[in-house]
Image (cartoon, rainbow, N blue to C red; front, side, top):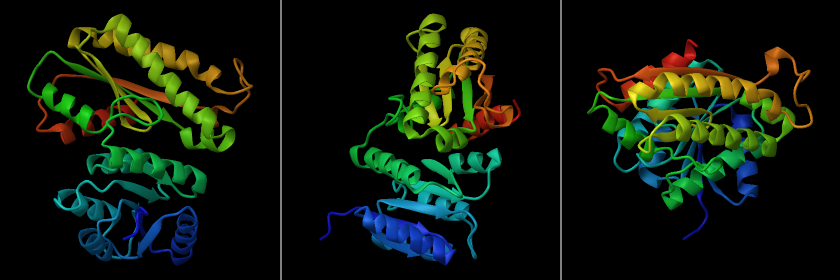
Length: 283
């Protein structure tokens, strides 16, 4: 029996599917492929791949429905899914987050970047790690469990900070600089929480570029204000060899969307996450 990890590529563009397959085989993976959503669901149930690369636009059922069926099936629910899409709207990220996607990559994508994201997702799945491989912040089940606890009480708030245009930054300045930005954001959020929060607060990640601070309701205003100020003041320093007064066009510069949410009536964690993502989408 092969010790190689198996990747399922769900992509109806034949040339793109074959290119991905050849690249991943060269990287040492076993590769399965499907061009139809129904076939992808069947393969997941019968062969249980280690990871699914899932296009959203498929000829029968779309990628969201495929992800939903993977998520609700006991045999397949722990298979990490990375969405592949040409769409950039934040509403698509919200749907992917609700369905438990571990990452979201827009086309055209860099194969090295995709491989790094795959590697991180596979490492987390294999080791049961509950922290982000780049920032060291809790994510996944740890964050979901804390959010579930919040639903039982009243004295809580969540501040969410969404990092935008990260793909363009990564393409321009490279993976190392991009990872440095993510780690810097994590450090800033932890510093603010130590200063304005309590020992019960949690700094974590909903996705690779969506950070949250869970704090007491009374602390939300101070945390949100300082997160906004510190992150916006830091943007210039995220650019290697550019610094303050950067000439990077405004339309290409990193930006943050930041919003706070106090305790409210939410049916479940998925509804709370949806509300958080809606807040930053309108910031």
